[in-house]
Length: 140
Ligand SMILES: [Zn+2]
Ligand SMILES: [Zn+2]
Picture 1 (cartoon, rainbow, N blue to C red):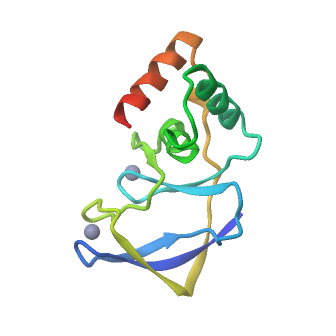
Picture 2: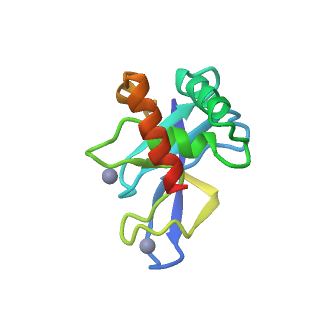
């Protein structure tokens, strides 16, 4: 799927770089950026096995939607890229700030983004699943 890419300015170090952004109409979809800001994946949450696990875990741990975000959860547990975790936020590749401003007027180009994968997460044993989920909650 081709994603529109926009010029982005870091408000902390003034670096400018390109970032893919979904339109406001992309319901149930999100782009995750790796923590160095150099790699992106797309995630479609609707009826994804990760979303179903999320709902199950929220139910078991009695968490409400206000206490935990599906997007944070999905980014955290997506398979890493060059050993970098994904985040549910764009990141400046220079200073790693997420304090960014987008020029949403002019689309610079489009990029083909692959879907995030969750091979590691979806193959965790039940015990590891609870352990890692609790680690995730502790970071809150
Ligand atoms: Zn990275
Ligand atoms: Zn920066």
